[in-house]
Image (tube, rainbow, N blue to C red):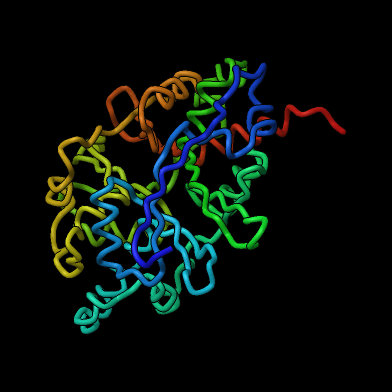
Length: 329
């Protein structure tokens, strides 16, 4: 692989089969490979690529993450995500004198920033594409990763081959499409222990955007609900919004409010998805099946914030329920 981004068009010859009879078996009997679409494009970054160029490539292709490849060792080197760019923002925020070198900063220098900030290293968890989907889900939940690269080994050269990246959204959509409705899915949120409802991070339209970025890092979350003075949910600041803010490699122009930052969103932003404590899991799965949802904001009858339901929460519930339903061996 050459330095930079390599786009690989891949195609599959098989497709998901008919829906299974109940909820738990789907992740158990399927492989991670089964979740992939019939055709897809994979963009891989060489670790020698400049951070500024990697950001431009992400924006141009409408993606928020990419596998990393070390061409010197011909090995998979982790997954570049929005969190890594947030780390760069924080580093230069605390070390403004270092901004002069930002244009020469490369992806293989991210480790230095992680050490300087004392944050979690770049995601390196991966799984073989033929491993059970259930195992991929467990690895994601254990590592708190929202996506996992599928890495194969070439039989002849024994070198790594990055096949694709599976996201929590694609897994849940696969389950929503292929799994028949069960009693577990007919329960409303108020009757199941899923989601976050206490000590929620929130902000207003007037909150400095750097304060929200610090919240994302401190609480290891991917979004912060934006409320008005009455506690009514009016928007959500997402970690991916950071990508738009630093478009062009500008890391030192973040002295703006949340309201000003959200105005920079693309016109095709789909908006936020909400639900209530009385919504059942099957209706939420239906939303996942129809729309590209990454989280739902839980509100009451007056649109006031009650909680946040992430795809990680839903995936964990599905897996734990599946384990509980399995007969003893």
